[in-house]
Length: 233
Image (cartoon, rainbow, N blue to C red; front, side):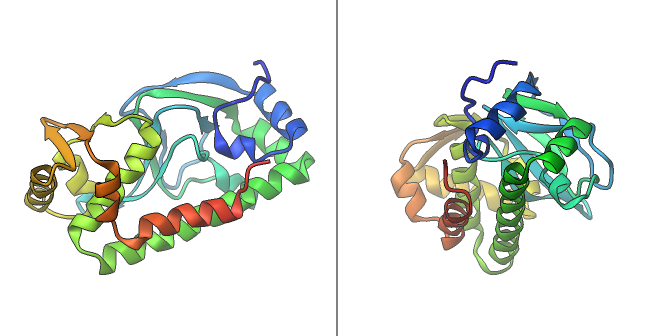
């Protein structure tokens, strides 16, 4: 495909030559909500650099699919190839429709071997992902439900690039590892304060600034980790 500037922040952290070589080897594909792109313990045939839309990363814990991360146009799916690991540790499902740059795993692996600059950037992103995973573990253990829910909504808002997006209370309960009644009560309280509007799975962020004030420190920490490790070229 053409090497025009892609709207993916991770690719923009690459040098121009590395970026063009990678983009020229990619195909632009549609992301379909509910589409599974990675399964825990299985090899993936392709890597993905989202341009729009986002992927939800989960891990099965008993009857829950616990949220462990999200990937939008700030990152990629398949980063662990930089460590020589081909199997995915998580399940990746498209959470919102969009597009992505897609490359066969074998081709991406060859690029990693031939480009120290690409290997460095993807390795840094691996660090970011693991650091954010640690932050999520701390958040789930020590923070109340409402700040955790706000963090999830802010993360989704960032990657949806829209004030409105679809997510059900059942999905949020599964992702946060809590009962639906707890999500319902927290969402109702936020709606009463004029922070969000929510009806039948349709979420609208009304006041992003006020909503962000109610988040725990984990959301800001995620942002700092990414900014420090992956400055744009």
